Length: 142
Image 1 (cartoon, one colour):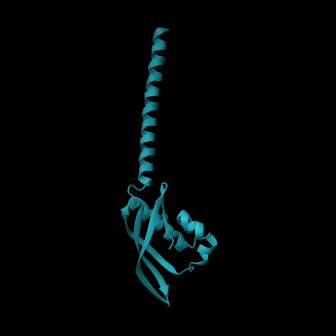
Image 2 (cartoon, rainbow, N blue to C red; image 1 turned 90 degrees about the horizontal axis):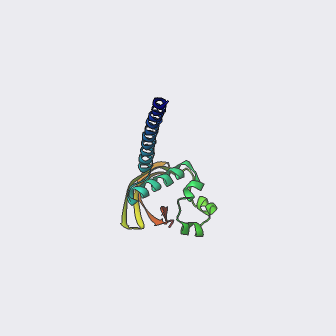
Image 3 (cartoon, rainbow, N blue to C red; image 1 turned 30 degrees about the vertical axis):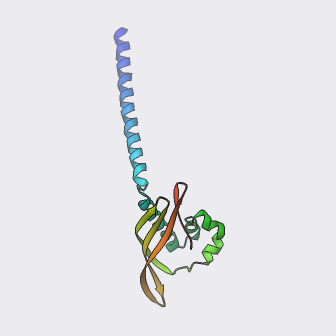
């Protein structure tokens, strides 16, 4: 009886050890995945948000693009007014080249946008102001 009890304790100890290792590995993978998803610097965060905003504009998703406006911009401009201020189908592409942050809560995104004017496609540089409020970065509508 004693040897059977010892064998059961040993087996349950092994299973607990294996379960702990599996949990630790799963936690490590989950943590690494989350860290990989979040931008590491303010410049990376602004660059990612600016590109996401322009991707929404290119798709014609006004609601999503409006969601990137700073809280102050949204106070003075409704979503309807914002949508009315945009020319649907005007932009053909947008690429955020870089972001530069001269202050802890303010950055400038530098982009190249392509649009069509009088039947001719044109590329031009564009600069946007982004500010941090709370834990997120927001586009300042000018």
